[in-house]
Length: 627
Image (cartoon, helix red, strand yellow):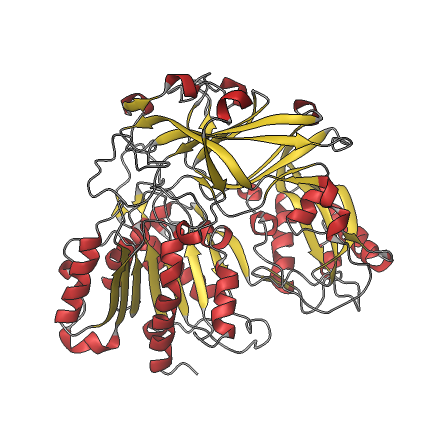
């Protein structure tokens, strides 16, 4: 429905916050103020693999995933007496060579492994289930509120959380109706119920786990915390994030770096918020615009664009209602902000729809005028309606990184690198898991690379970056659809039309990881009239890349630059394909950097190579006249 989509951009979560004018409205809160309000869960956990499958969950129906190894006794929910005798592992892993995940092997990687049997050297193998358990000692007076929060970082891939033997939370499972499964529906010995009340939905390897559970599940003294983790592929376990049991909401905000320092004088900002609510409910876009600073910028929207967006919303609604919960004013990132849980509903012809539901809305103000200034974010997520006729008006998303000078040098245009995600993933992972914004800022500050825009499309989790016909009666999805055209036509139009880009091919690069590394050849190299620098990290590189090179004339080879890498222990793609591609490009005197180095198929590997590939793109842009 049209009016359901009008505030999607407004409702998207922020990547990072731009620090603006320093103001001193509140006293700093000491770490000591929160030390008693959370229990650190990082460190030693007891670990046990109890089941191994023959296939990846997302590719085969569960009843076709043969169990190849089983420890039936260990599959049951363990007590401390049982799990304390198991192997002890560090979670998250102290060694970041796997991206903060546990190492898959103890010692040397076996020379031969058909991936179907549990081997002595394997710690947490592909396609398996394991327990992570630890005893959590809850001190007196810790359970002060009705709920507590489990911050469990990012878990690879699916999980069920048990507190004192009771399943209290889960991610990655659906019931027979296709909605999120009740944790209580998990079978007593784990696994799935295919097409039943607890069946596999998808991998949640890039989604943060934050579980709010009734405090009554815990008690003072020793508690058993056990997590049944399903490793769909590659490594499994906890990414390197905060792991904690948290007693209060304010402490959750502290650990997540959200607002906690209340402003003692917020009258001017409260007046702005009140005027905005009144303008929204009166459907008065001009009155709302009067509350915005002339320099307003909220993600991709400036003041005029925000006003036009609201006018479109108001035209689609008979009435608009705004509900804020737990709203208060804070000093955050040296800026005054309003922090609340906001829901905006639209009523049309008797139908009420929530057009915006933001649990953690942060509104930023100009400290001098009290007007809203916007987040001035340099990294955020955008929803848009595809420009491709073949997409049938499908709503798509991408994340974007803008360089440090983007809002300051408003006449400057920038080169662009399109960064393609891997299988069963999205562009979100580069922001949420790999912290690309911090890394790009550091590389630019060190003058290792030039300022550039990086675009991270969500392009179909299993699309292989190909234009695939949609079956009759079917719909565009993660597998079928115009997913190659989405990159080289749709995204180009969207980005060049909405951002200050240098729209010439010599200022447009393309990178990809895993499936996206294959997409670099299928989409990028086959369209040298659009892209002229190419980087494939641990890529699904074709065995023969010569068909991808047909549009590059030999005389034009000096115009293009290539980077390729792959891990020698990669078991998802064939490193030899990267070797063959690198050697072929060398044989035709192409400008290529390629390497096979130690490492496996994970984010730590490709992020180790990305400074080199981004420098390749940067050098390419500079050689073509980037000022």
